[in-house]
Length: 584
Image (cartoon, rainbow, N blue to C red; front, side, top):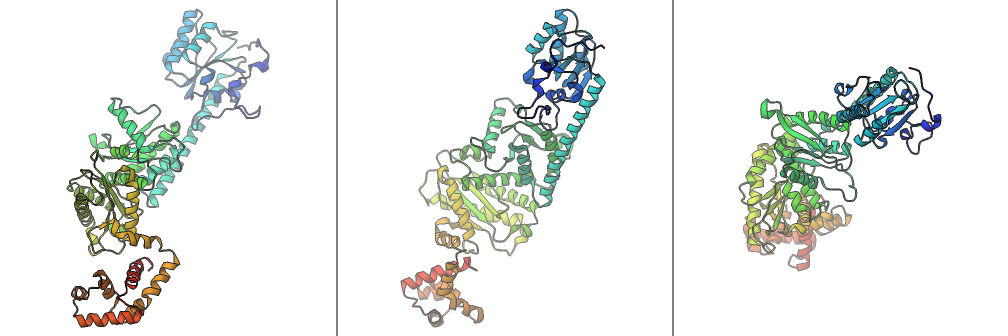
């Protein structure tokens, strides 16, 4: 083909669309989404730049991805294409009549090609008006080349770029997969893997059952931008969309099935869904999601992992509520997403169970947490009120919210009865799931006050702190949070040196005595104070005769230099004995 002399000065034909604002004149190769090559990028490569490309239609569509490059001259070439191609032609197959030219371009647009590039000279000195007008109306990028270029060189160069881009995409997906594997090897589980993937995708990530029930929701992490929706709110919107008979996710979403290892319906264990809420999702996110799904499939093969995962998701929500990361006005809707539907007018009862020792060495890791979540859920089903149960592995803590039936006063009868049933169910669940804990200290169960959603987070946090302060207390099946106010105050002062000095000053000689002499006297003093100084009741509780008790009380008085009948002395002794647990 003889090159045609362009009818405009050469510098006017530089494709302005291939420049990146702010870059120097010599750097005109545009940026594109990672893992793709766009039409603009292709036009900026040397092979096409030598043809002096001029964009005559679809200038706003140059960020379209190019899947492949094809060269051809037949009139019905659209039938040979699959979509996403950059088509190179000299125009011999375009046709000579306007109707043929319009049909040629329209068929290419319907096929979904990335762009049409026509080399001027062999067939046209300038592109016909019907070709340009149809490309504009159909939204098809149309480029004319003012100089002859070897199409084979263009094809080789663009295909090399496509391969390199795809390799870079695979390499980034490999990095994400390797990092997720490291999370797993460091002791993390499904929630940690999902949080890692959500941070990479910069969008909310959901794990759901095949029939659409939420197992876990993870956000990108960090401080969300103003107006950003909570992952559970996003899930509620997706659930509402499905309820409106639109089962497909929003455009641009990524959904990957997690295999279950069995044939038929059991072949899908769960589904990983990523929604483009904060930003678009690209091919790299799809590949990374597929590799993450393979990793999740291995983790989920262990027994009842889905139950543990759902319980951890609920535990994260309850913790976020307690720490003020969930607005009280948003909490009821998010709780409904997690399956909690208390009565419209009834108050909520926050309860926290804390295991006395670190449960993981005793329970054998994540699989036993799954067994615990399963056992607790079964035991709580018999309590007779709606319950939202969560687990918090890092703290060895089980928070929950129970829905009471009627509007009750603080400390009403129903609160105590429900708290008692919940405490019994929690302890029974621990015994069932972890029989090897026999002989260990029983868990501490704290019941907060009956409140509405506006105060549920504050009361949950109060109960959780009280559970920390109640370590070592095992004389009751459950504790009213109000009975631990002094312990909680002392626990908050545990790092302050004055608290240890106070204990040493008030009961130090007694503690020194008990380390070297028998019988110990601290239990006698504790029992005496617990019975408000009534000696007869104290003697009966200690199984002592009165004279022996009198002798012990006299020894305590001499050691401490205190009058055990003085009210201020009794107050100081009681506080010091309680503080002793927090300064050991």
